[in-house]
Image (tube, rainbow, N blue to C red; front, side, top):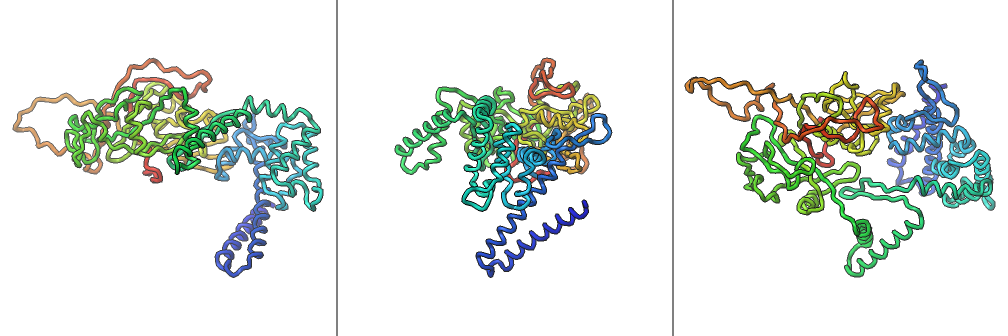
Amino acid sequence: MFDDAMRFAEQARLGFGACAATAEVVGGSIATPDLAEMLVAVERARRAADAAELALLAELSRRERDPSGAGEIRLPDGATADFCGDEAAMTLDCSIAVADRRCRLAARLSSDLAALVAPLVAGEVPERTVQLVATETRDASPEAVAAVVAHVLAQKRGSEHSRLVALEHRELARACRRVLMNVDEGILERRAAQNRRDRTDVHLDPGPLGTSVISAVLPTELAVVVYAAVEDLAARAVRDEPGLRLGAARAQAFVDLALRGVEVRTRLDLTVPVMTGACAGPDRTASAPTGGGEGGEPAESVRGATPGMRPGGEDVRGVRLDGEDTRSVRLGGVEVPGAGWIPADVVDRIRRSEDHELGRVLLDADEGHVVASGQPQPGYVPRPGLRRLVQTRDGTCRMWGCTRPAVQCDLDHAQAWPLGPTSLRNLGSLCRRHHRLKQHPRWGYELDAEGRATWTAPGGTSRVTWPRTWAVERPAPARPAPERSRPARSRPARSEPWASELEPGAPETSPEPVTRQPTAPGASTPGTPAHEAPAGGRGDDELALASPPVPGADPPF
């Protein structure tokens, strides 16, 4: 039976391909009504495919590890296993939020909403219609759910179809709520109170390049007042500045309202190129941007220079980079994980202002990768320099599809400490949910020396996530051997300073740490699993970090 189902799925895929080829090859000669009929047929088949996916998700979500350790068990109808959404996201190549929602819907369709499967399989309604009914009945009693299902499947007066098929989504939602109120009079009030208490929030997400999206979930009466204030300020701005787009006026009005009466300082990490090979010398320096020291400290000179610089810090184009006037330093754009991309000209304006804290981020001038000492750190808790290095390399949680910024994540030892060292190649950023998932015996997780994370789901699906910036460990700097006096006539000719970099197989050296800070013994944050270190903490190492690559550029590996 399994082989038959797989054969039917392959035949359906081939049929969809034939429809696409027909439209492409002879679509111009097909009458409009025939094209519309073909489109309706394909949509009905796609809805049936959604029903098949949900049925498979319902079964996959019920699989859980046997507590006794012998294989897996099958949970009751309507139950879902831990991390089923993460496995579905990897298998279906969708976001974790979408996968979680579909797994919950699949569980409902296998239990109290099972009667809604038939119209979905028949292609009469799309998945989002069934999802609407599931959302409206998510916290209702079994009697209320049964009443809603019976009501929406009944024929709509004046139509040959059921309410589920005939009603527009807003009308369908109102119909569900009327039935719920008839069965349970106070359900809407309880749901509204819970939402106002537990679901109000503000979110920041990346928007179109160079922009971000701020979304807020507010009590309705407050949202109406806030939006009215935005509209009023925007209308005034449009009157005062003819030609100003209304949308831009609304955005600026929202910013003015949000920042009125408050003082906020933000931090951005800016790129400072450094030489890390034999070319690096004490006379080749480049000053970090003003206020660009690590941890908000004043910037200091760092070893190295930008490509094409002459000794003394003079650019080949004649621009001085080691003087007091740092305005000649050319800065790139900055990607803020979880927020968006800030263009280079805006970064330059921010650097000149006093409302932002700028951090120095060191980039290998020749190879463009993160540079760090290969020497593992003693102990379990990573020091601040190593922590910042890992967070800058990763950008976000390393789980497939997770977008939580790395600065909000735990630092996980891929191989548990003390078997695994506290070093760049063994540390990765994982949010608390995926930190727990990584410990699950049914999941596989590997982190290689270049920062690539490989996840393997219980069903065998594997996905690879790449770090936001490339990171390579260099050998730890060797202690210089004591010099011996020798006759001047026997001194060999000195090779060029860049010769070791050009010779094949020549060992690479690591730059000296930029700064050293005193440290107090690190301590894990309460509530963090005992085997890993939480986000945050202080130490005494300062490592070189790399800035984000240019948007659209392929990873260097």
